[in-house]
Length: 337
Image (cartoon, rainbow, N blue to C red; front, side, top):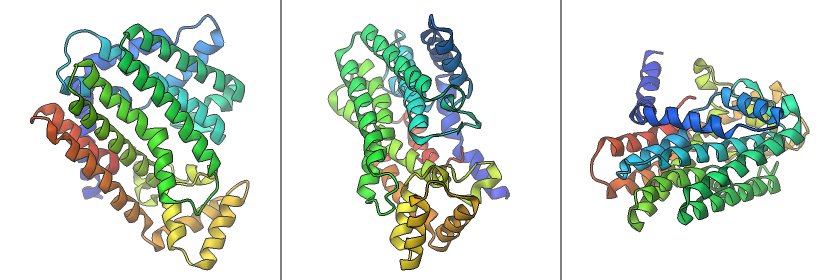
């Protein structure tokens, strides 16, 4: 137990260090978000404030602020405005996600659609996206506008691709990577690239940070999907099985189906073809995941993206900010929250 607690303490350091390094600006990001949530319609304010009260790591905003600092941006508040913008894009996609996935709980609390219904949740998500575009226009940089608008489109396409392959237990790994690249990694990539744009860095710096963010995002999502089946981490209070109950096909299921024998394949397919899955079904899948050492396989695949992310930072001189970003690659894989 002691070694596990030590590990948790160690891997949380890079996230905490990033947060501490831009803490003064993160407070202003939160204030900016609150300002942008204002509406003449009371229900809009009620729903958006409820969503943001449920918390979150603000990792995408932190990446925007951190990359701007890494690239030497110091004057002005554009990094604050765009970090808030990126968080609002993320919030909007979560609202839409919960409707599509019929999600009922997020971060331990009821989802918006669970309380106010699907129609209101979709429209409030759209409202946040419209506020984002206002902020992009206010920023006045066409490169930023093009980047974030194309990212919003890519996220939507990723969602559609996932719907297209819903319940396909024989999904190709390549398809899975396309989905998470669009749905998750694209916004990570934009968050890190924005900082270099604000600092007027040359293209090779912009490309390096965009590549870093993309591979960090892939690692982050693979870890997130793997945590959902990692019963060994229940000591940290992580609820497992949410993706399974929602019928999502993620990397652990894809790798499990590849390794399973004929009878097990039939059973796995039956679980995901059903309208609902039970606790007994989950226990069966977890036992198969343990049997075939799937958790380890997932982490091994994620390490490839860690290497790519870390290598892309070689273009930067040694600094506190660079070391934090290097540490985040391991944090994204090994985190337990």
